[in-house]
Picture 1: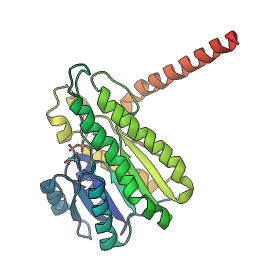
Picture 2: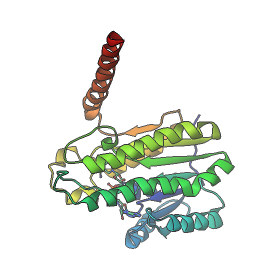
Picture 3: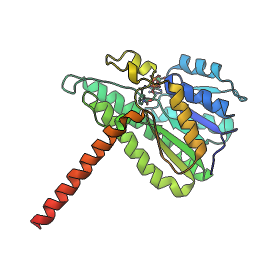
Length: 259
Ligand code: NAD
């Protein structure tokens, strides 16, 4: 199976910057109608101005953490295009720091934008997608949604939530013709990382590569649900999940002996 993006209606949150902007450009290049949604009005206007596809894009101001804002976007998309084919819940924020000293506001912010933003986006369009019997959802998590690291505790918590939500939704919607993907990139060269005080330079990859990966996996439509970057993190990923399995086995073997 393969998925053609020509004339598809695609909503990208966080479309005013970074990975979201690149997604908008590449979807437009595939012939899609692109709706760039973001809280940053200037950013989405710039993005729409950059699109080179055959359809003009649409810039829509959206606060992903606000259900009314999603409702307004959904109504605007429905009345302008009559449908939605691809929803990319990509807007996000990133806070780093030791848990004991980081302000609790960092958690509330990441929770509202990264978790609520993703769930509210899916909620806004789920009835339309189910009614159509087709559609694609791409939720941007992070490798931090699969691998835990120090000083990233609250960001990690928010992205584990996005991964867990996406895995569950993938199963729930599989027989309704709706594909759910979760994007788990490593460090990307976007404004999100530009004022972060950690040495990332050698690991930053261009956001266009991430966006291309998203397009390729959607078009391949081969049953995958994870989209990754950074192959060098494989050992870390394997180590984390192997240690969970080892402890699981050790626990159950010990329990069997007791019983
Ligand atoms: P970015 O800062 O360039 O873009 C994030 C966008 O989200 C911005 O345009 C911002 O205005 C928007 N946004 C923030 N709050 C919003 C809100 N309430 N409503 C609507 N839009 C809002 O960063 P990016 O790197 O392009 O990040 C995109 C996604 O990728 C995020 O979910 C991020 O967590 C994830 N991610 C990024 C990296 C990385 O290294 N840059 C790595 C893994 C995952």
